[in-house]
Image (cartoon, rainbow, N blue to C red):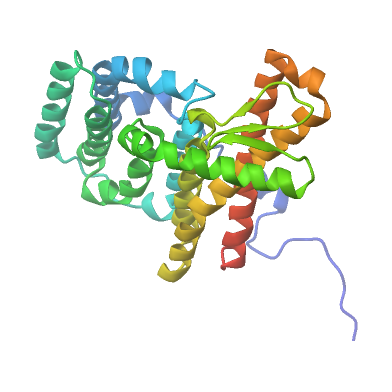
Length: 313
């Protein structure tokens, strides 16, 4: 008994070509979207937030993000990571019912009004908190409690890119400067550069006429803040157990300080090896800036590897 091969479709089933032709094209209905009252409400609230917070964002937040020697140079990545956190859980939250919560407009407008009045004396920590509160309340107004609950982590994560750590920076910078300098000094000793440490934050190497001054910007706090932001991001997307998250949290600060000390040591090796090139101010600044990004990249790679070893796939 033989089985005949046939490319004919089964009875009642359309051919593959017909299926492709009948498949409707998905196009975004802009006209319908613009007429949607929920979308209109979201646009109005977004415009209100931009109007009230633009001076703060332009004069403080954006300025700090663009300062390559500052502590918030990683800030441009924070909204991207927050958007990824939304995308990561989108399959679950997209089915939530969109239920406008009008009573949330009361605290929303209260936050915006106080922000508008207080903008003359910019208090970065207060305004950062109000900005996040305004964004979260706008989600509550437009989508309802389920949407607002799902957005707690992405909206809260954005605080890591806002200037709220100034007091912490002022209180810990000095100790981190000394620790980074010690790590760099011992690293230079190990590689045989024969460094000389004049004081707790100043190192000399034999062939470099200038000093390696571990200034405030080189304290390691810049790297620490960025690495802690990365650790929290990995925690949120990996969804590890509490003790694995504890391991990640305990690793973050020692790792960033150690990598920063090695970065300073590598700068000393380059300066000692090619002193004429490194003596130029522009070249030294370029080397300093690039080394910061290299150190940050190394930390991120190590954190990614540690997260995978702990079970993240």
